[in-house]
Image (cartoon, rainbow, N blue to C red):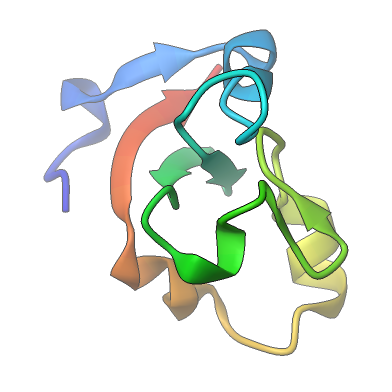
Length: 83
């Protein structure tokens, strides 16, 4: 969606943690250094998706045991980079 990482805002892990679907209305997750807005996904409505929680970097756990490929994030807007 974004054409270059240079055009994206950088967020810290603490800033990402606030977008967990509980503290603010936004629901964000990070994967491989990029932050995705999953707010509109019915699968993330309560800030979690199965055993995964929003507001976190999911790279390690998704690379380890996700039943789908990273292409699942193609459906979501990249809104920033994880610092």
